[in-house]
Image (cartoon, rainbow, N blue to C red):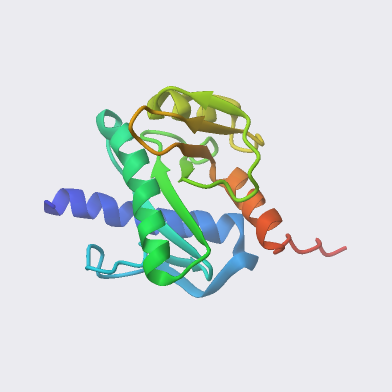
Length: 176
C-alpha cells in the first residue's frame, strides 16, 4: 500500500471513530479508537468502538466502490471470527459526500434484525439507493450478485438502530 493510500485509509478510520462518537456514544467502549497493525494474520478489525462488533473500514475512490463494499463485508466477517465477536460491520465512505448526508454506508453479510427493504443488482446501485433514501431513512438494500454472497447496505444510523434492536442495547432515555 502506498503512503497516500495508507494515509487515506487512516483518515477514513479516524473519521469513522468520530462518526460513532457522534451517533452512539452510549454504545462505545472506553477510549474508542482505531486499532493499529492492520493486515496482520489474525486481524480483529480496524476499530475498537462497540465491544461485540468487528469493524472494517474502506475509503476507496469512486471507481472502486464495488470492491470496497465486498471487501468491507467479507473483511468484517473474517475479523469478527478472529475476535469472537457477535457482529461484523463493514463501513464504506461515500466519496465527496457531505457529513449532513449519507457519508458512511454500512455493509454486512447478515442484517442484525433480518428485515430487508429493497434489492439491487450492483453495489454501486445499492449505494445510490441508500444515499437517495437519506441519512435517517429506515432503508436497507440487499445486493444479490451471481457467484458472490449477498451483502446488505444501509446508512450507518440505520445499522446502529438495527444493532440496538438485535442486541437489546436501546438508546438511553433523554433527560427531562
